[in-house]
Amino acid sequence: MTISTLERLNPFLPEVIADPYPVYSHYRETDPVHWGMAAKPQLSGAWYLFRHQDVLQVLEDRRFGREGQKVHPDIETSPVPKAYRGFSSMVSNWMVFRDPPNHTRLRLLVNKAFSPKTLEGIRPAIVEIADSLLDRVGDRAEMDLIDDFAFPLPVMVIATLLGVDPADRLMFREWALALQHASASRLTPSVEVYEQAETATQAFIEYFKDAIAKRRAQPREDLITALAKARYEGDKLNDEEILATCIHLLTAGHETTINLIAKGTLSLLRNPDQMQLLRSHPELMPAAVEELIRYDGPVQMLSRWAYEDVEIGGKLIRRGDSLGLMLGAANRDPSRFDRADELDLQRQDNQHCGFGGGIHFCLGSELARAEAQISLNILINRLPKLHLVDRAIKWADNIVFHGPEHLPVGLSET
Image (cartoon, rainbow, N blue to C red; front, side):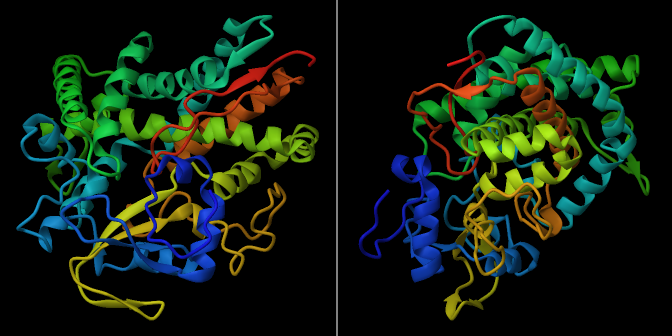
């Protein structure tokens, strides 16, 4: 996207989503605390922050938060209009949209279930799932990296963790996309999008209500059972909170990992010297995944509300203002990262903000890291002739969960 003058930014435009980094660079250099177009039509605008230090400041500052009704009781600020009762009620129990003390309580309880032991125990299953997906590809000359690998892998992993049937992944994907399209920060979705999300919510609820009831009668070694049993200082999750957490894991958890695997592979294919370095030095994989997240992360923007008047970069952010924190821009900030626009898998200083920060630092970050490390290692080593097919990439209509809808790749000699 070419920008000749300082226009009010609308980050939800398809041309921005398709090529955001020149846009980020332009505003980071010319107006790093920028008053642009708001996602919600009731607001006259929103602030967009592009510098690493500014983004981190807001992420870690309790004067900013997620609950818009605290500062705008007169307008609809929740991610989902209350008219869609099932969907709105379910999303209200997602900890990502809550502030303390509710956020603190939910996170402590979910952490009890989402333990390091649980995550370590899933690694062999990730290896098995990744290998099985490539086995299905067989000797084909081409595959769609999304449909054949990046999509089914995290859905099957989360299904395995939860203890539900991985064969239900296509159904989960359909429901999860319906929720994501209606709840991610964007210009107001259509009534049809909200109605589809409401229908998907009811389907999810019926599915997991049955699963929770079965675990209460017959506990298993899975995450649903662990969530049902989680206790902290006498407190526990109620059924609505367990339902919401399961749905949130399947919705946000799988979509970010799909994009991490897809965009990580795309970045490596576009930087063949780094691909070869990683094949030759597999011990670099943990650092490589961190660099791939910094270079082109799966989440490009987070939203916050200002609870007080705060000055940032010489601009007065007023109580009630909406903020878009451009993680993708912060992770390419040349004042924080040397050669910020280059992919360097041996980068030493890499304190990126790809998983957010502060109290909302991504709960599933270690699972996402494990999935990316294992799947990329298997992918690039089992497919030594992997290459991009010469087709235009169509990007999903989402600046928050950012990634391609499809990614055709060749598996044999060009």
